Length: 279
View 1 (cartoon, helix red, strand yellow):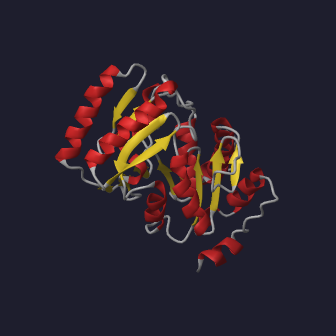
View 2 (cartoon, one colour):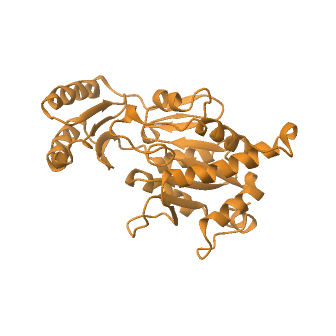
View 3 (tube, one colour):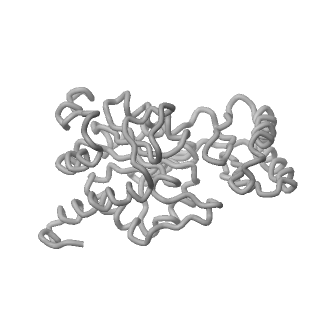
């Protein structure tokens, strides 16, 4: 079945209807959809430092129920490394594309990684050492990527981008500079969130489903474009704007969590042993 036929069968996309109505539509046919979500700024609120984020206590279980409801066709697509993303939602483990797709854990548990050379390790070490003289800038070594967070020193943005561009030249053509919300990152150029989404869709249980891509940042735009091209849905968290490929928006991560709680309830009710009960 083509993606066009699936889109028609799943109800299509009516741009005049509120996003909340799509939750009901999706809940009626969870087997037609695959869900892809960013983490920071999308599922959880942003914090001054990546390790300072707060995960609402009911979110891991809600994600587990949603994943179950979608038949396992739910993946997280994040700039975080797999090991750190997993810690946020323990004890549950989901399919995850980490480092913008540089590393990816499939639904079967296998992990694909792009190997990084020793030369890039030296570049990261030099950058980390130089950053000691940048007050308010936090360097995050992600393994296959390195990020400079300047949320506590926004006035250093232009200077920091220039320095990162210099290190990018040393890293070579296999790397690219990725800007985000108060962060600039050097990462492998042949991996992005769009290609990660597409890779998942080539594997069960994602195969043959329409993608729903949800994110909040410029790093999620590749994922939005891929979802749109395949006849799916794209949703940006935050204020709507003309500089995004997303079809819809939600005002905040909290608003998304409320919708996920509704889908989690659908998943819980679908369990034979809990039918007729409520959370």
